[in-house]
Length: 113
Image (cartoon, rainbow, N blue to C red; front, side, top):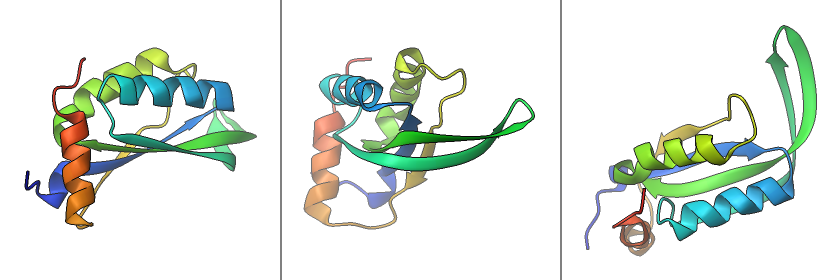
């Protein structure tokens, strides 16, 4: 299955702890909304929230998906996430290993959402 690279997305999100990150990653992959979610613990975030500068340790999620699955992924992430406004940023893949891009497309085809 030849998939144009631009249909593949790398999405970024953060979670407050490993248990939350595990739960969200498992659900997104199980429901075929993501082909893979990499969890990077130990991310240090500095951000402004409600007028104050905050700091926190978080788990960074790298979510591999497609444009076709993104809307359902966004809805599901917001439903699962404990933050009032969870991070979700999608970056288009401009190129990559063709077999890997094909795998992402195959694993998100037929998503349940």
